[in-house]
Length: 114
Image (cartoon, rainbow, N blue to C red; front, side):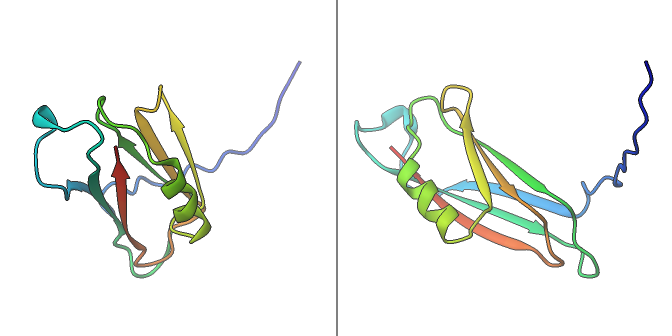
């Protein structure tokens, strides 16, 4: 048995990709009220102004006491804020996918979790 394939491995883009998440809602999860909505802002940017990059993936961890707002995720996908998403690990991670990061790619996304 034999197999032949070509695999292109792009150079690492760690120095060109910035990602940050901030809590916008005042208050602490320790003192959280049942049903209170917490908002988070995620900023993603690709700093190369000359050429883009291939598929870009962002993984956002959801605090254990909060629920993902699936309606908001669907609306954001329909508005082309990202190309695809998945929620995994018992709703503890939101994975966002972009097919490509164009030069100077910047996204600022606001999530609400209950």
